[in-house]
Image 1: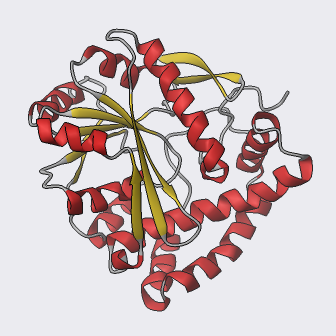
Image 2: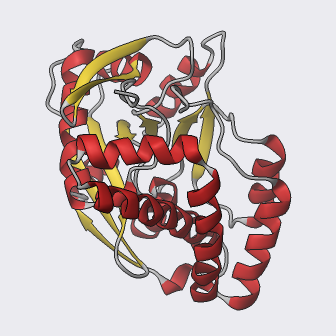
Length: 294
């Protein structure tokens, strides 16, 4: 089993092009159907990620063995639908989806004050589609997502050429820490800076926190920075519903300034709450708790 996230996802440029051809030619529902065969392949031939997600269902959610095995396939299929929706919403199928929210008044407040804010999400649900809906509701100049940009460069370039222009901009983490200045500039402009709070690259500084009943490692950076800057912090998730629908959840952090550990504890509590509602939308397919072999 992979014990750490390797910094990039699987997939080839040809695979992306073929699937997007089917999506744009035959529509969303037929793309979902094709996904079932792709998912079957990963279910059979990806033992490392399957073992990791089996551990999540069996040991952390306490599913039975049979339910855990069945949930592996369901999880892969859910991820496939989420990735399909990401392309569909950003191209010509945006009007096929509906969008609801819970706690969006916290985002309303940030934008009304125009003083900036930090949003912390995770590799659950489909946060990357949020800006297409937020920009319908607000007049937003920019949303900034902090990323390692570790995806395959050719795939990212291809996808950038396909999707509709949006307000989402990327701040790439740099070894010389110059990205910190970009974050400050974005906040000074009243922008929303988005972090994913559940993955770190090997060698990065970490914090440890109990999560779903066992200790796990989280990146120090987002919590240290968010706890030191004098801007509001929200935990925000965009989760897929049963059909072509998405639901945004936003919760305000209340941890005191300069206490990254307390902020992380709030984050893990919010993640536990959202995963109780959407257990199949956990997309960290590696040994997240570092004890998957026990």
